[in-house]
Image (cartoon, rainbow, N blue to C red; front, side, top):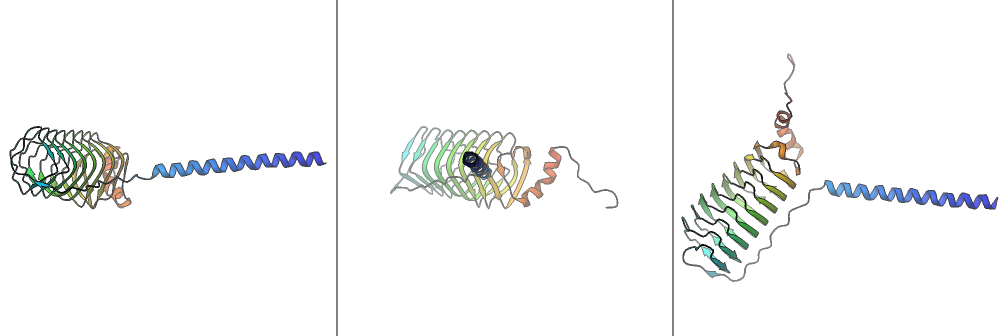
Length: 256
């Protein structure tokens, strides 16, 4: 009897221990699944500019600008491809047709800049704040954004084709007909923005948050929203586009 009781007790311990381990495993797996389902927020830039020296003059190709302030300058039609800006501020500058292709901006503030046809193709922006910009037809194709905040302002016909955006926040701005064709977006947030007729053709997304977009219009590429999170209301608004994408006709029966 003692031996049988002992064996039963041992069996019970093994069984209970196994069940505990299985329960713990299920709980851990569920936690990982829940964590995987949450959108990872973007890391915002923390720009702390040192005392700046006012800059006077024109831009130069491959110029090196460190700790300087470009205040209220008209830089229209100037050539500065390949220039490097570190710990700089551009405030209320005119950038009509300014060539800043392949330029690098590191720990910079661009405040109140304005321009049409500004060329920033292939540029690199890291730890940059863009505030109240008024731009039209700005070329940022192939650009690289990392820890960038774009707050306020309006940008028309923004060209971000094949650009790479990581830890980027668009906040309270209007983007009219932006082109994200073939771009890569990771940890990108659109907060209280207006997106009008966005082109998402070929875009790749990961942890992209669109839930607080005030107005969401997608001209092309609704099938490329994998990796984004949207709200229930946005899902209902986009339902016709989703239905059209998979070839479903939505119409009421006669007399209904």
